Image: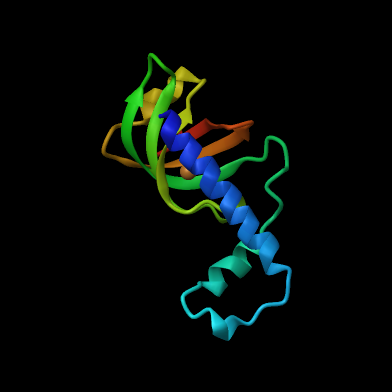
Length: 125
Ligand SMILES: [Cu+2]
């Protein structure tokens, strides 16, 4: 779980770096492998440093751990956080949400970022 969230943070940091680098002039033709459409969309998205902003995504429930208050979810890309699709641990403080997290099912999630944690705030089928 710890490894995964570290990876998530690393990806987040490197994605942020990419966006900053994009402010410098660059030759798109020289970099055929890059997806400029995606990067542009991410750059136009609202800033991710808004405290307690609610983020939404669709996620496949891989595993839940009610005792630890965490859930492993394979979420889709989250452009406003510059996050690619990935599997990672979410913090579940509201234990009632575990009733909406059937392993193997895809659900719609809402979450906030609190420090290094991604905290689930709502789950819908
Ligand atoms: Cu993630």
